Each structure stands twice: as structure tokens, then as C-alpha cells.
Image (cartoon, rainbow, N blue to C red; front, side, top):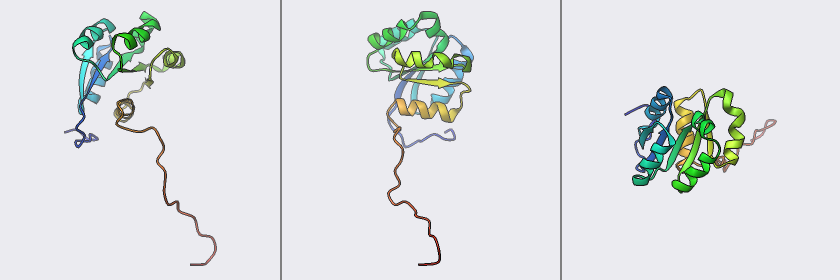
Length: 149
């Protein structure tokens, strides 16, 4: 058991980590292994092949692959792996392209530096485990002024 992992969670989701960078791929896989069925793949075509048999719930795609293949790869993912969410993993220098990628079909951006809390939180939101709605305080505390009971 790892620190920070909710062991009461029973829904095991399938996540494809698609990256040509072995280090980034290994880091993301390590972060997501608990609570997810995580698969490392080197390119988009490998994701399509594996996805034909085992449909993923989420793809984490390296920004370098999107840059190399163009924005049409996001539409290809939506067509060939319907229902799967897509998050693009970006270096800080690529963050300017993030808005374009979200407009072209990506559901989220995960920016470097990769921290276990940030990656797990974003994947849990995309997988429907966490809500993005702010929590509402039902009984707000009202500060007392003066001397009274």
C-alpha cells in the first residue's frame, strides 16, 4: 500500500500512458498504478491497437506526440477510442499550446513538474471520482463583534 491511496475505492479504471519518453512514462505509471489498470505505450498507434481489445477510460498523451502528429491525432483518438478522456502531459515550454489542444479535443492538461497529488487529482477528476464543484459550507461561521452572547 502506498501513502495517499484510497484503498476503499473499488472502481478500477483503465489508463493508457502514451509517451515516447521512458522516464515520463515510468513516472506516470508509478503514480497511477494503485487504483488504476495502467498500461505504458510508446505511440498513438500502439494505443489504438491495445484499445481495440481493451477500451481505455483515460489516455495521458505526451505533448511531443501531439506536436509530431498534429491536432488531428486528438480527433483520431475520439473517433477510434470513443468515450475515452484525453489529458495532454506538457512541459512548461509547451503550455502556450494547451488552449489549442483543449479546443481540439483534449479534456485536460497536466503540466510539469509532475507531482503525485496533482496527477492523481486530475486523473480522478477525469475518471469521475472527484467533483470539480467547490464544497459548500452549510453553516458558515459568522464572526462575533462586541461583547454579547
